[in-house]
Image (cartoon, rainbow, N blue to C red; front, top):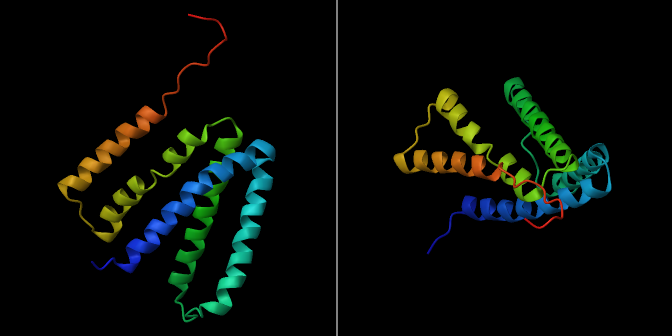
Length: 149
């Protein structure tokens, strides 16, 4: 059975991001959102400097491609920053991270609008289930006061 390379990369990303949710919560329990975000940025720069000599990039970019990459990186960074803030302000990793990672729902809407992609019925059902899951995840039980009920 042949496994497509894109699927392998997607599964590795899933593992990395799954672990990231816990490491982000642990860091924001100990240090501020700003420091967590700063070290996140340092790690990105260090990794970029390691990857750059190994994978020679294609530098012939149009201005449009350059700015799309810059905007994408900026939005990714702002998403990371706000997820750190949500965790630092008391959000549980088991709730914050799954909610943050429902961003593909917005990606689907934008892909339909701007890239003229289409969704199948099973994909639409998946979106509806994801929205239901988001609503259920965001409903926290009230805090226990220590008294028996």
